[in-house]
Length: 167
Image 1: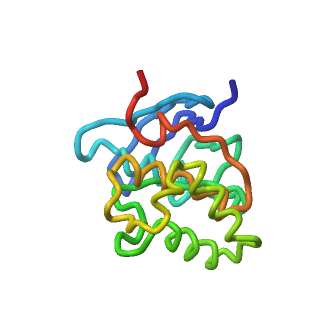
Image 2: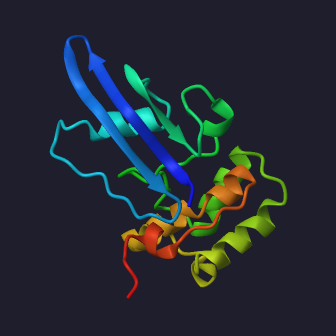
């Protein structure tokens, strides 16, 4: 397996305050990983460092072997699902994808959108408003977008994306 995320002795100081102290972990391809902790533990700071939005004071954070703070091309290939998913609840699944595909000037977007809806198991719900989807469906739908947006193929585990373990 290869490391998707690797943090090595990541430290972050803001003034005299230590936000993170020697955080190290790896997430390998295929892993299901949760990063938990109480308020103020540094979870958001860690995520910002991983995404290249914030530089660590010491240590390094790599995604697929790249430091996203230094490699803007690599940063464009990474997506993140936050509490607010960026989907438009009042428009259809198809129109959500079409909107983002137009923003990114994706060629052959209608064909790619149809393929993505089929992959996500939402072909029959293509005209339904996204606000009518369950949270799990929204998560999987959102995580399925990178092939449309980045023109690259990705393999996603429905178990991982939906947040519901399969038996």
